[in-house]
Amino acid sequence: MVAWTLWARSHSTPSGDLVLLYYTNYLGYQFHSVSWGDVPTLLSRNVAYLFASITQMLTSQVGDFYWRLFAIAAVAGAVRLARRNGLTPYCVFAICMAPLFVLWLPEARYVFPLFPLLAAGLWCEMHHAIGLVRTSFQRGSRIPAAVLGGFLAVSGALAVFHLGRTLFGYLPRTFRERREVVAAQRDAYQWVSRQSSPDARFVAYDDMLFYLHTGRPALSVRAAPKLYYGEQFDELVRLHSDVGELAHKHGARYLFATKDDYYRGEVPARVRDRTRHAIEALYRDRLVFRSGPVSVYEVREEGTVPMARSLP
Image (cartoon, rainbow, N blue to C red; front, side):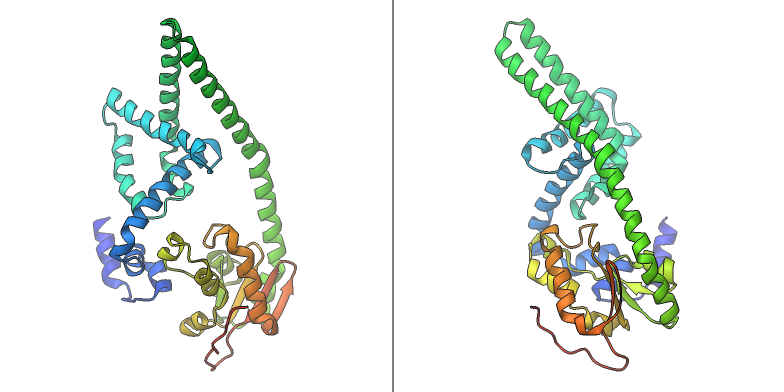
């Protein structure tokens, strides 16, 4: 691992461009776009996102403090297990992962390797809480025991309900929708393969999927993390919609846009519609292909420098 890291480092292209850094150097991407003054906000937000991601895995809910109690209980239970059984290799792995979660936005997919440990921690903490209820009831503190027991029962029932709704409702529906999206995009992929030259470059949200289906290189828009942490939504909309400068800088000519872009959260849900409408307003006169939810725009003519544009 050390040898590979050193070799990759020595052969990488030095760059201060956010897009190239994102594709080749995550650490450099973070250092380039986050200043020391942003660190307190970054750490506090990432800790909050970490507990939200743990909650999402355990209950399928993210929301308010009530649901994050499950994440707090899971972490407390994992600590309890470590004290009881000692530092197992899995615990050491979790401890080593923790700093990475604090430094990088900890989405649920990144935290998933710790799911068995966190699930065991939640079970351990629930078992401990049930023991407290039983002990309080036996000692005559029946009202506090009943309140705590009722809270645990209702919380457990709600968690099971939402997990079931996710497993048997949301996930099958999401898989079905993604299949429909890929099917709808197939005509657009075929058009790109037939009508564009082999060396034509694109800006596309699902850049890797686009390349696999068309054989054409593509890049995705990247924004500085501090824009997400600082909730600078206007700037996020501008970066993801007005791609003329990005296309000119990296030799891309076309924008491949779909109504399902940003599903991973690169653009917050509350501004996704604004971004799509801004793209339509900026490039409606550059539309070269449309099939259902997919639009292809010529955002840069060969040999031209993009004009400055203003958002609607």
